[in-house]
Image 1 (cartoon, rainbow, N blue to C red):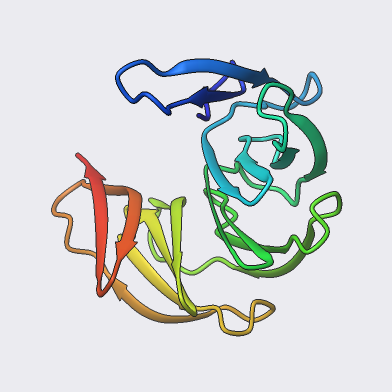
Image 2 (cartoon, rainbow, N blue to C red; image 1 turned 90 degrees about the vertical axis):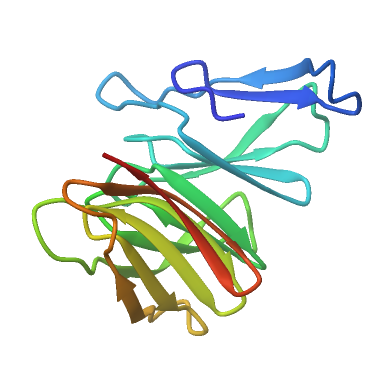
Length: 186
């Protein structure tokens, strides 16, 4: 769980009626940066944390009771949402847009792609989901952006819709099959 200024928490949910906290870590960054855990994705033995102004943190969670920070990068923006697919982490980085990192070496995430499409004063990447060769970006007042990420170094905007209504903002996205589910706030 990304637990804001408390950092990353790991729970044993083998009994869903009784979740038990088994691990915790908090890398808050330096005094000039936020370090607020806002989004988390897990792949294999690693947790990828969208840590606000602190950027992307990578934790080895092979021992859930002792998560170890093994990687970190910060290319600007405000890391808000993260998704992982294959050897890539996709970071929704608010005003910086979508960043794509090669995580084949989790200790050294490398920025390989970036895009910042959108229109208007309320464009801000809040969340990202990945399915197949596409990344789906909840882009706040800009609505939903769809990117072809078959070449992670060159994400291409292939679709866009903004039908959330007056003043509504897209803040969350999930994809299942042929459907994207977009969470709006008004």
